[in-house]
Image (cartoon, rainbow, N blue to C red; front, side):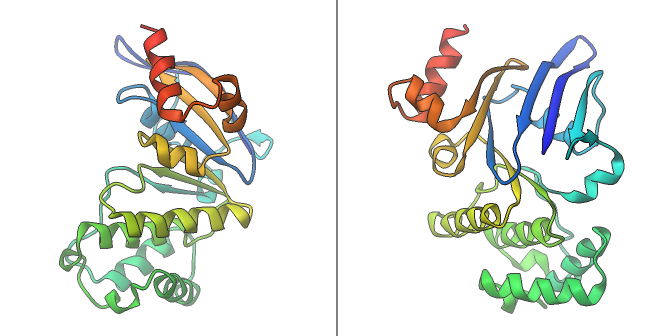
Length: 237
């Protein structure tokens, strides 16, 4: 569904990505893993057309990716941000309309999602009245509401207690079962092992390990992903 071919990006003398190639299949959860500063966030911004690569190509559903394709992406960044003084329902409808939904459709879907996540009672509350976890639930809903073909979640469980993190994991897997493709960027190896079909490990701007999770675990005698991550990064030093 998404082909990332030979992407390179520099900022001054700093090379954030070096000849990165990844192919992400439709209907899979793809784990984008790596330590801080590895280049994950830069790659996500390039896919979202927030910044442009110095070289390389992106293909979306078999054609060169354009700005028009970005509407088919739902992006939940690690650094969240909602308008604190706006009411939850009012803000959610506003953000949904920016994604092309009409008001009636947005309101109907929002109530369905809010009911699923047991947050419908927050509709008329101001965002500043909600806990960080509650705000993140709202942002999760806004991210998936326009039913994009590709979802990108950057550390989606940050700030969640285990119960609510588990609720979001189940929703991610349900979206996958419906055919949605998901890129899941995280430092949390147990969550990646639980959710991902395929992974790529980026370290110092380069892909150093990629493939199906089952194949990678088999190649490493069934070790857990934490140990594989540590051994791979350590071997490169």
